[in-house]
Structures are given as structure tokens and as C-alpha cells.
Length: 332
Image 1 (cartoon, rainbow, N blue to C red):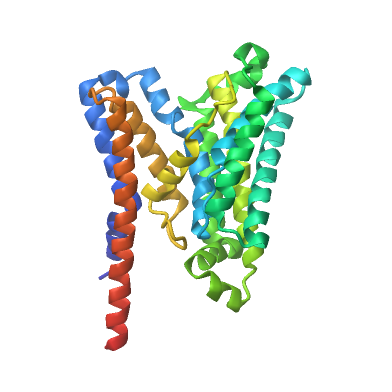
Image 2 (cartoon, rainbow, N blue to C red):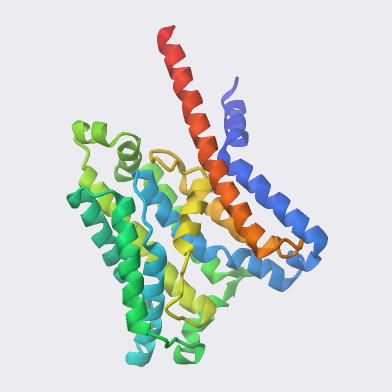
């Protein structure tokens, strides 16, 4: 078999290709029932813009999961940075938009650092740590915001314009999400530190014995995941213009679900951020499509849950099959 044939076979057999085909099928069904879903300026814009924030969060969650960890606090981190974004514009009139974006990213990174330090140095399971910090961070923003909310009138027009601005019919927030995706994909695939993330997730004990800086890499994964959640919070404020203490509620599960559906093994060590991004697009596209075909809200959530369970079962099946093949090869 030639190199080109092997490449084509691998592409067609990949999880990412399968998800893209499902996305196209969902779009085709929705468009056949309502042509404005795709063939209108607003429909095209929403198709690209709606998944952008979740893509950024899913990429961050994927990086953490690759190291055999999980961060349940990213939704609360989004809420803190989104509300902080509005407060900065209110409390510091004239503050540059770039400064607000950087502050949001840094605050998110700081919250991720707390998670990473507790996991790496405290040797506490990430599920337990981030479940706790999820409630702590959410409690902090609830206490801070109370019943108040940030309105679009509280933020400058040049910032809100970021949520609607388009470059050649492509929303700016979508471009930001693609840039984040490309940077993360390059880092994980082409740098030593990125490849070490996979090694740590595949076998943490072996990675430590081999001399890999597991503590540093785990902390880095959480910091990057937190920073991207912080960026998502700023994007959320620009996109929706209204921020309350309930911002980002449940988004952590959507981000993790998108990563898992996209092929990131829940036990770490495999998958790509491309798959996580496509998983995010699939989830948001399904959320837009199901109401069009008359499916109630309950079943919308059930479909997402079924996709997550199916992805986990598929991963376990593929892992078991691969293990059997390796065992048979050794016996030969």
C-alpha cells in the first residue's frame, strides 16, 4: 500500500473525520427543514459564531484530560472572568480593551494554577480538587455579583463590537477560536513539552521513572486550561453583552463532553484538540438543530448524554481491541 493510500485510509478511519461527517449530516437535515438555518446571513453567522466559545473551552479541557486529569471548574472560571470583564469597564473608565482581555486570561490562568498545584503537589485526584474549586469559584462570583448583572450599556461599544465584528463573513470570535485551536494543536504535536503531555497521560508512573517533569507538565495543563477558560469568559461578555453570576453554568460539562466525543480518551494519553473542537461544533449544532425538528428540551439533553456515553464505550472498545492485537503480536 502506498503512502498516499495509507494516509487516505487513516483519515477516513479517524474519529475527527467521522464527527465532521455527522456535523454535515446534521446541518443537511436542519437546512432541509429550514433553509434559513444555513442559507441566510444570520444562519451562516450563527453556525460559525455559536460554537466559538465552547471550542476554546473544549481545547483547554482536552489538554487537561490528555494528562489523565479533569477540570470541573472551568465553567465557574468563565463566570468570574466574564463578570470581571464588565466590572473593569465600570470601575476603570477608559481601560484599554486589550488590557481587559489580558487580565481575563491571567485571572483564568491563576485559577488554573491553584487547581494544578493542588493536584500535582497535594496528590489529590483532580476530580475531587476541581469539584471543590468549582463550588468555591462559583460561590465567589455569587457573593461578588449577588443579584446584580452587567448590562451591555455598562461596556464600551468597541468591546461589544468584538462579539459581532466579521472578517469576510467570518465572525471575529470564530477566528480567535481557530487561532487558539491551531496554536494548541501545534504545541501538542510539534513540541517536546506537548508530546510529554501524552506520555504522562498514557502512563504517569512510567513517565516519572523515565524522568519526565510530570509535576510541571500537569500544572502547565491546568494553567493553560484555566487561561483558555478566562479567555472564554471575555468572549462570553463580548458575545452576549449581559453577564450575571449564573454565566457559564453547566459549561464545564459541555466542554468535557465535547472533548470526549471528539476522541480525547477520558483516561488520558490519546486524542487531538481537533477532535475536541469538532465535538464542540457538533454539540452546539445539535442544540440548534433539535428544536427545528421539534424535539423537546429533555431529549436534547438526552441526545448529548447518549453521545458522551457512546464515545466513552467506543474508546474502551478500541483500547481493548488494540491491547488484544499487541498481545497477539507478542505471542507470535
